[in-house]
Length: 354
Ligand code: NAD
Ligand code: UDP
Image (tube, rainbow, N blue to C red; front, side, top):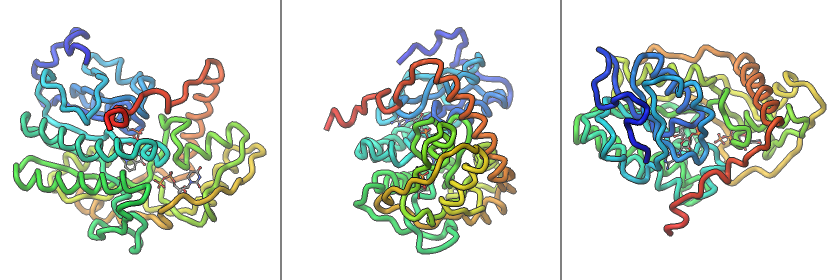
């Protein structure tokens, strides 16, 4: 781990009045990096801990312009370094979110969700810090109730290929709930539904980035199964505003809160939208449906509306247009230099241990 004072700011000193020192795990990822940008814009000090499995330093270019920001390479399955200064708040986002990546080393994913959260809780207890945890709509599994409200307990296959993530996130919710009951420290749990936008990795593997990159490169769009399965896609700006509201709304509690956009579309409809917007000659390529792929998903966001006064504002066509512009620029940049494969970026340490 790098020294904490190399950048010339004493991170142990107190921040401005009202400014807090905040730890973001998974800060180099798609959502984590946007969160770091927001927290820095709010005048806080921010430290990102990330093992760069799916994240990248590139996502942190804007944050890195701030003298109040530090990015440290660290795996949260290992206790958070003692020598780091006291944190007021910890946002725990570290965990691969794309099925392709979280299934690459399932034991590591399970350990990140369970052991990683354990380490976050240990640090929060030491620092008397509040915790924000990025949970997921995957806690509902392949839901038998539609739309999904927080009172629904889900339908998860505990031994399937998605279980490392789904059950890992469920277990994290369990221990965080026990933690807040036993310590009284504030915990906020966001159950995030499919979110997309700039800074997703071109090889992330999730459906929005796959379709856009495929269309921009003139490749066929890969639809898994019939394409009649549904998802409800939220633009990242809306989601990050929801994080902020959930962490600070006076009425918020440790009860999980769904954050997502209730506008539900089939995967086939999404493919057609992307094809219309990008143009070109791509067609639809049908591939097998992955095991345990949820058939329907739409958030009931009543709780977020009532407690936080939050709702998403960016319509799907607008968010897709912004995301297409991002990938268009990014692919053009990457064509100008050799591309690295994200999967080769970090060797998963747990695989080596076991
Ligand atoms: P992402 O893969 O872009 O970001 C995850 C980040 O965590 C990456 O930077 C990765 O390198 C880092 N990471 C993974 N394992 C780690 C470990 N053991 N130690 C330290 N860092 C580690 O994914 P994202 O979409 O930004 O997701 C962020 C969080 O939000 C995740 O916890 C995810 O489960 C949750 N979430 C996201 C969505 C979504 O649609 N984007 C939906 C539901 C939940
Ligand atoms: N999907 C698809 N083609 C792709 C990637 C995903 O048809 O190239 C489907 C996938 O089977 C699922 C939906 O799109 O039904 C959303 O998949 P994603 O991996 O984005 O997220 P999750 O399944 O975790 O909601």
